Image: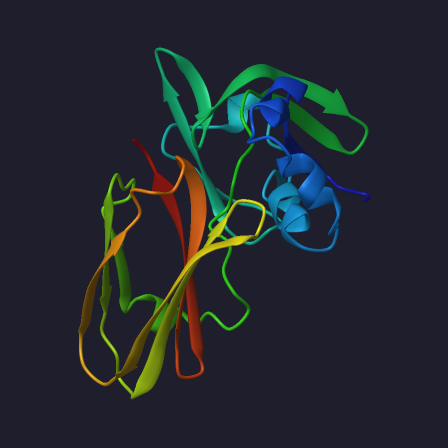
Length: 198
């Protein structure tokens, strides 16, 4: 596009560090999750390194914010370190980063009010994930967990609930990494990004 844009560009090594088969799977659906991930690396403005400040939140073309952190170890975008800054192009600037940024991708039916009633903790999780839902209407509560390439790896049906839902989900059998948890109740679908560590 005409720009100006700021692109936070992961290195080849950053993509190679993703779980095996991730990139190939993402590229099979260019209009899906891969588009959301790529747009999460682009800002609709030209931001040189001198324009960035510690704690700054910047909205991406994907719609969600990224956070700038500046400390004695360098400049970080979320958890990715800037390793080359200020590569000026005709329509903006590129900053090279050492990791792929993964957004907390929201379902199109995700409503802000509903989202504020879903709590998933701890995050990162080790063996158990706690799920608290404050429901305002009756609904069958279905929870699904998807890996980074969009494959469902777990699913639970907690039945028709009309009150606070407190559930503990065993995630000890899942490999470490980033997942999306989808909570469906009635007509509402809320998603959260979770990180499973060992």
